[in-house]
Length: 179
Image (cartoon, rainbow, N blue to C red; front, top):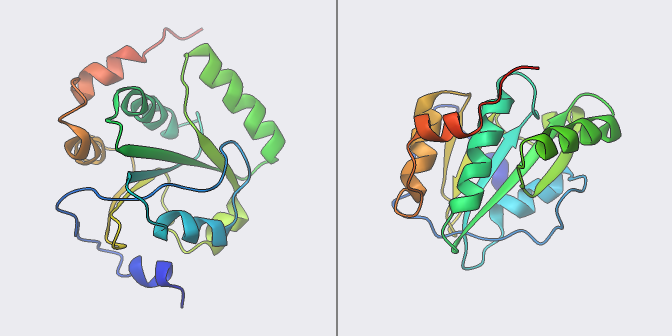
């Protein structure tokens, strides 16, 4: 069993992290990512803190979390790295085009990888989307699952010294009237 799969056991995960000390990915953004590269992304170590957010894109409940992650990315401290992995069941090309259009309409700028759903199932990651991992350089991680204010508050807690807005204020920044 890979070290990653071992780390992701048990399902009821307790946050082992007192402070963030993490790592940075060696892959370039906006490319496809494989299960073995996920392992590398989660377990590599450098001097940066790391948040890895897994999302299904700007559809359903993933939409709200992408806006929240974008805000954090724009206001994060320099020692924090945020990586987004978008999981799709459709063609990666079609999904990517829709995502770019949605991001452009809202002036959202995030670095991300794209992963097909079948690869996501093989990756050993927790199978709820959206999910966010906060990882330290010793391989300890916190996992926050699904879209709730608790999920957002837990992420915000780790970067709160440098991120001034509340969750409610962040959500209001990204609200657009329906067309």
